[in-house]
Image 1 (cartoon, one colour):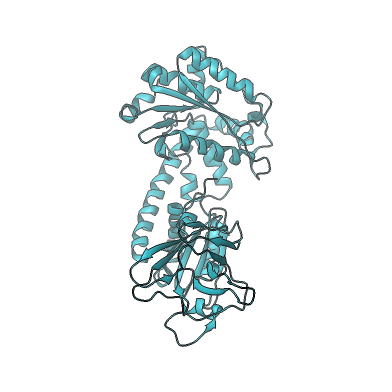
Image 2 (cartoon, one colour):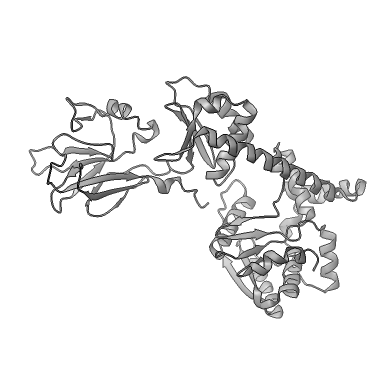
Length: 450
């Protein structure tokens, strides 16, 4: 088949070649041609049953029959798509790629059947959404997916060539009725706009694909420049998220600031910030007064400012409120609301604990006072957290470690505040069994699988 030979070196190195197979014309052409070029034993088809229509089960059966005829092993994955999502199409895509990420092992290649007409639709759609070079670069030819990689070998072919191949080889495929419903924007472009453009400019999809290629080149240059800026900005992994030097960022031009913000988010977040989110950072966060802690949120993450640095935080870290609980320090404690609390035996300074004792974990409610070991006097917890420069958004989430009251007449005692300090009277002396505390939020900084 045309195009597959152009990627021969990639396919020869692949441990296993997977093909996303919906049962439609495009993916059937890709599957059939891949078997002809690679052989059935090197190909595994992956069908995702989204359960979004009554025919979904019949489509899976059709795919099974086709794969059986070709001698290709078929994986069928039945998934649940959130029906309340603002875009069912996007929600289905997210679930679909979750499956692909789970399926692909290191060295595997996934082939998808996007073609030149799909590229034109994507670029037109993003143009109408005010996308910049990154969006107008369209569908990438290849990218990483999970531990493997994705390749779209038909991307330079118009759909007419795929239709010709299907007719020549008498392929049978299914038609998804939702693909003709013009109330959906992409279908409107496909069935109403594209035919008019093709009538006037028969090669319009090739022209748009060429422009997308130029935008891809521009985006590469943008990312190269942003990578240079990232080095100068001294990115620091924080307890939660990442931060950069705000003074250096402010010295850049607004265009370079916006370019850097998009690039930075792409390194750590699963979805890109839109134009309005980026401009909100430039207009409010970067220029805020020193005593302010401004916030800009988008579905993929959030930006905050504190202590002369701009912070990039992951999305979803505030979904659960912290809850009080008991803790046996011999075991790591996974905190409700995020993070882990660990007590490790230490030979140096640390928290003095009694053998086998159980502690209480609570969180700020206001009015707490504390006396850090080695300090002259007590102070309010609020002032101490400010002094220790804990980020304001974490101050209600830092675990407060209490020793329970031993009798009804005694009050429980605050003995440590996260891993910031041990309270007076509870620090280990020379020769005591000491424990070093660690409050770890690293897991929250990993992009959510959504």
